[in-house]
Image (cartoon, rainbow, N blue to C red; front, side, top):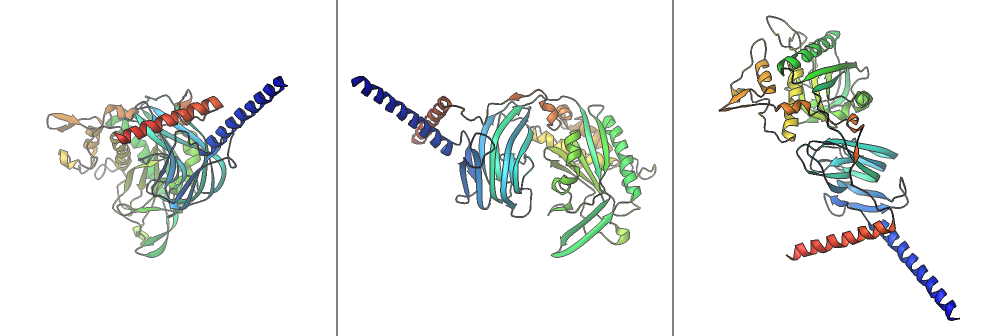
Length: 451
């Protein structure tokens, strides 16, 4: 009888242990956010949970629900090696996701405090993969966010994130840049001008398209010459027959084409060819037809990005008699200048983001340069690219390294290394270790507050 009682006790003890383990796992799965921090712009507008019902794989998903227009995310700070390519991926599912102002927000991956982000998902969509490519630049750590909202943007709805993964790629030191120019012969847009809705429809001429092709060839030659072969360029030209149907707007530049305005037309080309810089060529005014309501004080617009890739607008002259893009030995011997100028804005921006101090591209007067009648700012660009601008006892300009700091692409991850981030515990031992680690961190935090 005593032996039977011992067996019963052992069985009961085993059942108790199993029940405790199951309870730990259930509670852990429900309330564990791994090493993620919950970030919100305002308290009370977002609910964060681990969802055991809606999930992509065995692990519970991370659910972000913005009950009002808001910006919120799960984030984790990760150590990185300086000036190296990284890739972050996850699976995402959305329900009724919409932006306050139909902007670039939505469910996406981002680097907190920057504009670096993946494509954003809106609406109600089933599970799909998101990818963020970025270079660590001069940073030793970054905060990666799985976000519902955006940089200065607000979104409402529900997003589920799962299977987060981060990889370290191999840096490419090649100085040959692969560029694409997408020519849009037509725009057909509804815009607001001084509070009034206007419909604008414009067409490029065959001469416009020919000028773009000619100047890209000249651009290719001039980049090599001006940089003294510190960089070279290959390019492709695409004519997109569908009209641009939306334009972006800001107070400084007026109407322009952003990455979002052309994403659906060009992204398949960009992903396939992995371009390092993108031009969009279009007409936004035609004085001969009395249509110039979109005109602002720019002929080219650079310094933008297409999810990490340099992105520039090239606008056709408002007047067909304008020689801005035409070579003439008495009027203009440097018609490719706009292409060069806008690309240099990308190199200027990249240099600053990598931590280099460089002169502003528009500050040529400050350093004693002026536009020449036939060649424009050609001499300024040459000295700018070769760090040959005299400034007191030193010379300044773009650092030579910047010509090899190209956008991070999928080709950087042919041979990649997994980064130990976002990992979920896979068994009870790892769960207990994780819980113990959190208790230690909480204790350390309390001690810090007391001190």
